Image (cartoon, rainbow, N blue to C red; front, side):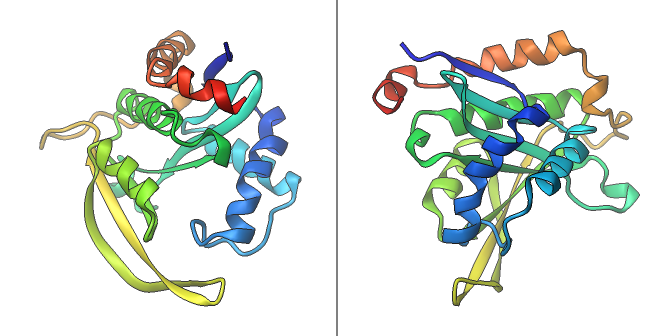
Length: 205
C-alpha cells in the first residue's frame, strides 16, 4: 500500500515542486508564466509565501505528487483578509482526491488565520480546476475575456470565490501561518489526508 502524507512544504522540496510546475509553464495555458524560473528564484518564492501563508505538499511514497499554497489576494490594507489559492498536481496523481485534500487543508488553515474570503483564478476552459472549485463551495464571480495571451492564443480567466469566515462584524486581526500552533496544523493535515482515495493511487505509484 502506498504511503501518503500531507505536510507543509520545505525548501528541500523546491526542486521537485519546480519539476511539477515546469510543464504547466511550457505546455499549458493554466499558468500565464512564460519562462521557467531558476531553482534559486523558485526557492525564494516558496520562502516568501510560506513566511505568512500555508504552502502544502502531498507526498506519495516520499515523492511530492502535488502542492498547493495561499497568498495575499490584493495589496491594499482593507483587502488583507482575502487570500488567493493555487494548486498543481503531477499528471499521474490526478483524480485521487489530492486536490480536494490540499484545498480543504488550505481553507481550514486560512480559517484559523482569520481569513474571510478565498479566491481562485482559473484559465478557461479547464473542467478539472473549475470542477474542483465548485465542489469546494466556490462560486464563479465572473470571467475576464481574452485577458491572457499564451501559446499563440488569447485565453479567458474565471474568478471563483468562497467565504472562509462569515459575518458582517469587524474581522479579527489577521494572523500569519506562523502564529498557528504546529500541532493544530498537523491535526488539520491528518484529518484532510482522509479525503485522499488511496485505493485509486495504488495503480499509479
